[in-house]
Length: 91
Ligand SMILES: [Zn+2]
Image (cartoon, rainbow, N blue to C red):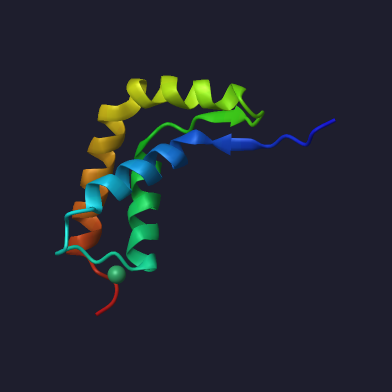
């Protein structure tokens, strides 16, 4: 039997959304530390969405979630970027 694990798919959505959002933002620090801060802040505002991983099945789930949470995810990401970029914890 294949090993399964639980994944919070909100993390994938935040990853994708953040990457897209920061593409053309050269005025925002995109070091690992800031990116992690941004992700943590965004994820804390969003509902966790756990699914048991199982190849194939999982992709349909992600697609469904994508449309369902798009606006909320983008909003949380923008807010998180704003907060982190105004409170840089390093030079
Ligand atoms: Zn930084």
